[in-house]
Length: 230
Image 1 (tube, rainbow, N blue to C red):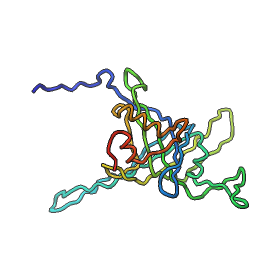
Image 2: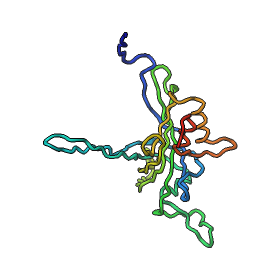
Image 3: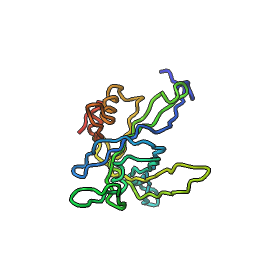
Image 4: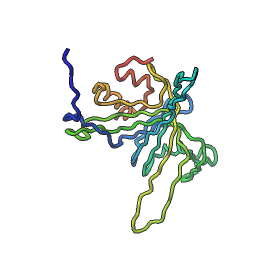
């Protein structure tokens, strides 16, 4: 049987990842854990993924290493943006103040309220040496995320003005993923997914003229992409 020698840095195989776009916010419903209609999030400059956990604890017996116990991983991250959609206010712990009955006081919101969990969809680009960033992309779906308390620094306008960047850390709780361990983060690659099925998933996420954008749970994502969920 003939072997196959490794060749490094072949043309079109010099891949890199960059960018973030097509960000969609899906506030979570308080009734059943599904998600409300998605809204586009403009002004995103960065989404950082910083999972933790996965630490190894070494167990000793008979004067030797007996086994290594690996802790569960937790998906966490941060969002940086110049602005946010109105629907984000509830996720950031802001709420309207009700006057008489159910009428909200116009122009007034109060902070420090209960934070609504949310889901996210965003796209990162995959480039190579021949096609650049047109080579492909990855879709990221985040579930059961909760934003933490954030700080904002307002500075006087001067001869070198800068737009204020807002930033929020978030943590997640994993959800059931058929065929895998629970997770709060799914990644779909355009390089390997069926193009027609991927288009169907994107239509679900971004909506159409007749259908609202929605965030499918992992079982439905698996089904859309051609697997068997449940």
